[in-house]
Picture 1: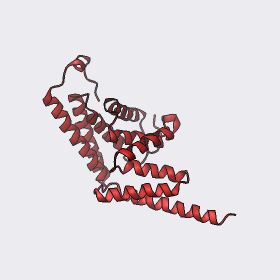
Picture 2: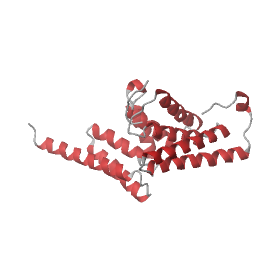
Picture 3: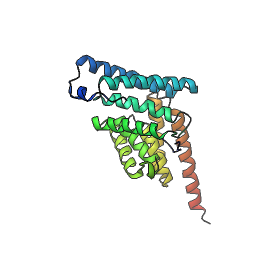
Picture 4: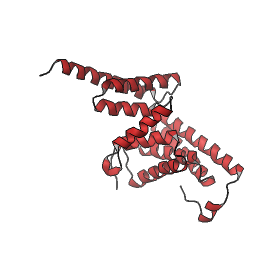
Length: 222
């Protein structure tokens, strides 16, 4: 049954779960996960819908291979989450499949179960908690805490700063929001994160406009 909301593997045999993974298998899973994440980034950078979808589908296939090779690889599960999530929001910030959404969240939670310090997964979790409605598991306060953790621990993080900037702006904390958005744009430019530059610029302009309007209103009370 389709739903709309903002934003936003095959199980190994039980017997194999208790067998040690060989060094070569670990290496294969690591390489596959890396390629899967690269495919996810390529899809984000592409402009044509069919090209984007092809990258995400390739990334999903690679990530599923990585998970099959080593179910204990946090990066493999995160790569699968990345490609599944991007496919779900391919036509905008909406999710159209309950099953797909649950599978995506399952991969994200599995990533954090395996590696609670996985900074990209923490950022993704925080973003989803902020954006999702309460009925779908959203929790703005907890999401903010996770995003603030990312900002503190990851100097190069752009997404966490942008999401926090939007939240701070909505609460009327325009100066703090502008600082976060400005930092996000500067980081995106410095580290050549091209996919984030347009969004960071748009968020900064939005926050600046809101701040000006709020300041004007305070000096011109009705």
